[in-house]
Length: 297
Image (cartoon, rainbow, N blue to C red; front, side):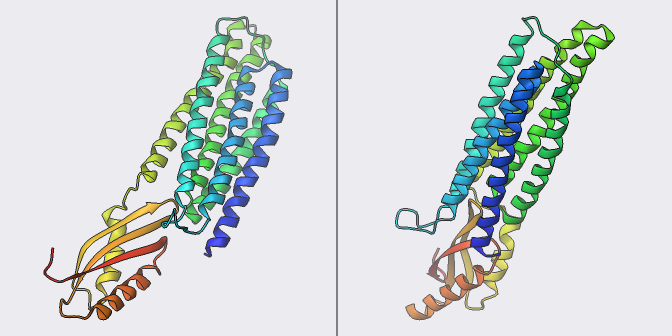
C-alpha cells in the first residue's frame, strides 16, 4: 500500500472518530443532565475526552507522514506513538475525574435517573462498538499504533456504557420495585467506568512508551531479514542487525562482513544490493549498511 494512501485512510478514520465522539458527547451530556444520571454524565465526559484523543491521533498522523529532514533523518514515524501516549494520559485523567465524581455521589442524596438515559446508552454502545471494529481493523491493516490505541478508546467506551446501562437500569427500577438503595446503582456504575478507563490508560500508555523508546523487533520477526541478507552470496557474515520500530515503520541498522580483498567500490555495490532487497520487505522504511572486512570483529 502506498504511504500516501495509508495516511489518507488513517486520517479519515481519525476524523470519523472526532465527529462521532462530538455527537455522542453532546447527546449524552444533554440527556445525562435532563435525566439526572451520574453514570451517563460520566460517560459523556469519557466521550468528550475521546474527541481530544482523536484530535491528538489526527495531529500525530499529520506529523508522522512528513518526509525525513535535516533534524529528523529517520523520519517522523514516532509522532504516532507520541499521540498514543497523549491519548493514554488523557484517559487516565478522565478516569480520575469520573471516579472522584462518582464517589462523592455516595455521600449525597441521589435522585433516580429518568428512563430516557437508557435509550441513549444503548445507542452509544452500538455506535462505539462499530467505531472500535472499524478503527481496530484499519489500524491493524495499516500498522498504525495510534489508530489501534484510539480504537481501544472506543472499546473502553463500550464497556463503560454497558456498566452505565446496568447501573442506570437498576436506578430507574428502584422507584418501581420500592428499593431506594438501587438508586446508588447509577453512581456505582460511574465508579466502575472510572476503573475501566484507568486500566485501559495504563495498558495503552505502557505499550506506546515501549515503542517510543527505540525497542527492537524480537528475533522471530528479524529472522526473515537475515534470510534476505544472507541470500546475497557476497555477504559472508552478519556482524550485527538491529531492526527498530519507528512508529508504523522499521529502521534497520546493519553491519555485514565481505571478502577483505574487494575494492571499496565492490563493497559499496554489495551494500546497495542488500539495502535494495531489504527495502522490499513490509514495514522497512530505511536501511543503514556498514561494510566490514571478513575476519574483523
